[in-house]
Structures are given as C-alpha cells and as structure tokens.
Amino acid sequence: MMVPICFALATTLTVLMTSNRGLHAQMITDAERLFSNLMLDYNKMFRPVLNQSKPVVVYTGLELISIQDFNEVAEKISFTGIFSFAWYDERLFWDPKDYGGIESLNIDVNMIWTPQLMLANSVKKIDRISQDWHTVSVTDLGLCFYIIGNVFTTSCTVDVTFYPWDKQTCRFEFMPANFYDSSKINLFPYEGDAWTDYPENGA
Ligand SMILES: *[C@@H]1O[C@H](CO)[C@@H](O)[C@H](O)[C@H]1NC(C)=O
Image: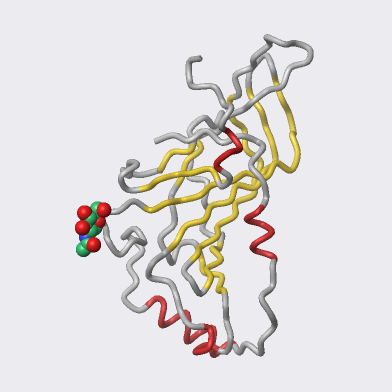
C-alpha cells in the first residue's frame, strides 16, 4: 500500500511530544522497573494489536524544514524533513502511579515493534528509513511516537500548467519494508484533510 503525503501536513505530533504533563521525582529505578515489566514476554516480531486479525493503524506526518534542492528537469527534490509516525502498541501501557509518575519512556527502536517503512520513490538507494540508534517515545497509554529527521531525496513530478505561477505538489510513497499489506498495516496522514484536493494518480 502506498500513501501520498503532502508538504502541508503539520506538526501536531511534535507539539504533543514537547508538552509536559507535570514534573515528578522520577528515579532511575522506577524507569528500569517499568522497562523490565513492559519487556516481559514482549515479542517485537508481532504487530502491536492484541487481536492479530486487525491492522495496526499508523499515522504519518511530515514537517518540512528546508528544501535543499529542487530540480524541475530531473523532477527530483531534496529536502530536510522530519517524518513522524504514531501508533498504539496495545501491550505497552502502565499506571504512572506505580512508577514514580513516569508518563512516557524512550525505548530503543530495535526493542519494540515499529513500522518498518521505506520511502518508495526515493531517488537514492531504497532503504528502511529507521536506524538502530533511533528511539520511540511511548506514553503510559501505549501511544508510540517515532520521529525521523533526515535529508530525503525523492522524485517529484513537475506540473507546468500554470507556469510560472505554479504550485508543486510532491508526493512521498511509503511502503512497508516487509510483507505487510493494508490488512496488516494501515497508513494514514496525520491530518486527514491535508491532501483531499490531491489529484488521483494518472489524472
Ligand atoms: C478479531 O478481529 C476480527 C476482525 O476484526 C474479528 O472478526 C474477530 O471477532 C476478533 N476476535 C476477537 C477474539 O475479538
């Protein structure tokens, strides 16, 4: 399944992440105990839905930081951007009261299930966009935030109909890096209305 994402997708996710729900005297022992308990019987091979017949819903967003290069002839664009992903892991939840008030925990990306996505219209080598040193922020409700900043280069078909007053739309095609289809992973833009005026493929 491929999902086009427009530049307009906003930053709600980042805002959510930096909001602080209060200060607590959190001890490292609380965090370690919480982490151990969460990882007990956790198997990252399985998608984070208790009912394995259901798809995982993964919300995606993009914050565009800067455009490095836009080559209209070669129809490719390089940009610095932050992709954000959010999903629920139904196994990762806890009561903050039991753990010194801890309401979120950063967990190494390779310790829990994450959507292994590729940017399918990347101009460079197609590779997973996650890397081993990344972390996922997990809240006490099991909400996982994963943010990946990088310089990405993708193809971008140029529409010169209204040149020079043109407005370009570049699309990013995400694709799971393994055998999942939409019955296993559902990708949605973080703000659904951001791309409603996007023309259908081939229009
Ligand atoms: C699991 O999900 C499937 C598909 O939605 C549903 O038909 C089935 O009843 C669910 N199983 C349980 C045990 O909830």
